[in-house]
Length: 159
Image (tube, rainbow, N blue to C red; front, side):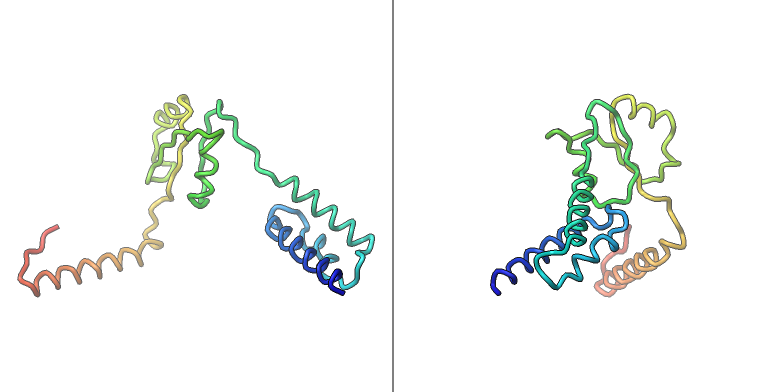
C-alpha cells in the first residue's frame, strides 16, 4: 500500500511539472487527461503513451539562445526577469537602448544606428489618455494633498 501511494505521489509531482509547460504543449488537456484520471497502477498502455508524449513535448519546449553575433530588437510586454534572461547571453550582458516612447516615435536613423552596433531596443507603450486618466487623477489628488499640507503649515508651495 505504501509503495502504491509513493508511486501515486510521484505521478502527481510529474503532472505538476507538465502543468508548468502546459502553455507550450499543443492539446495539453487531451494529453494529460488520462494521467489525471488514473486510479489504478501500474499505468495502462494509453496512460503510459500519454506520459511519453507529454515528456517528449515538454522536452521540445526548451529556449534557444540567441546568437550573440547577431543584433536584435526586443519588443515585448514580458517581465523584466524574462527580458534580463534574454539579454544575458553566454555570461555577457548585451547592450540595450530603452525608449519611454512607443516604437513609432524612435527615428529610423536611430534604429539603424543601434542595429548596426548590435544594441537591442526596448519600448514602452504609446500614451493613452483613456488608460492613463486614473493615474492622472491620483497624481492630481496627491499633489493637492501636498499643497494643502504645505499651506496648513505656512510653507511655500513651489514645483
